[in-house]
Length: 144
Image (cartoon, rainbow, N blue to C red; front, side):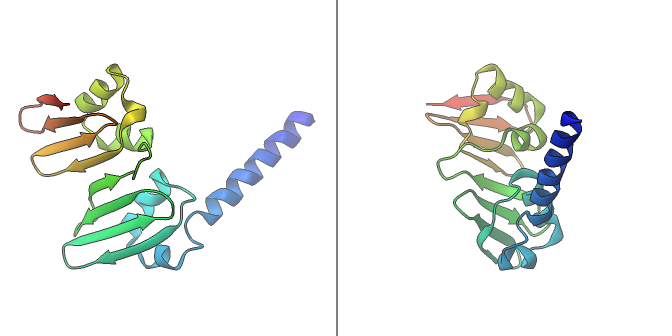
């Protein structure tokens, strides 16, 4: 019976947290659904402080958290943790597997402060250096 009570309490807490998400914020509701889904997946329960957009770019600043830039097709271009490490689930889902594996092997998954991607390259800023991944060649380069 005790396990059932704990299970029900846990499920209620999860349900309530998932229900509130970012939706308590006026800016959140104005974002395109693709960006809202991205935020719900990688930055759940984080409110949107501000956002701006033009024909090519969306800039989103989360409350006491990351800043993100999306292109006109709602694909992320830049995720800046502003001094906080980026979520590992984001790194796993959004970085090329070879780059993720490199970060994992060098024990830098908790040190990724920002990520940027262009059509040719991914750039990851760590605490003390920068790592690039060339999409065409698969080459990883670390700069100190």
